[in-house]
Amino acid sequence: MTEKEILQLITRPETDHDRVIRLAAEHNADLPGWCARRKRRWQIVTVAMAATMVTASFFVPQNTDTFVSGDLKCCTDDACQRVDQMIVKI
Image 1 (spheres, rainbow, N blue to C red):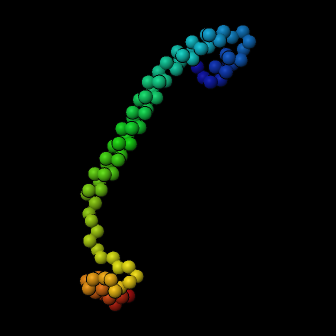
Image 2: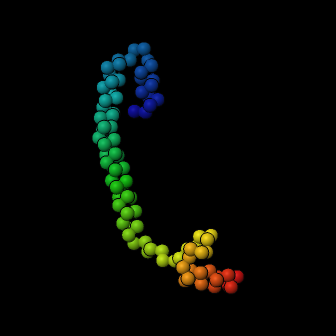
């Protein structure tokens, strides 16, 4: 039963409203179960996505490059040599 049919049924003056309530209950009998299933699926998907992200984070290699801030006084000799080599290539 479509929403339009339900509205037409409700707005008729000779409509038996108890019949409408019974029809609505019959057509929506599975609604609470459907909502519960959707909620469980959403929870499962959310947990699976979180578990995937956490697991994937263990497989990402750690970055071993040395990054230099604007202050070259604080960098190591190796980093300073890399910066010098990059400047020479430019």
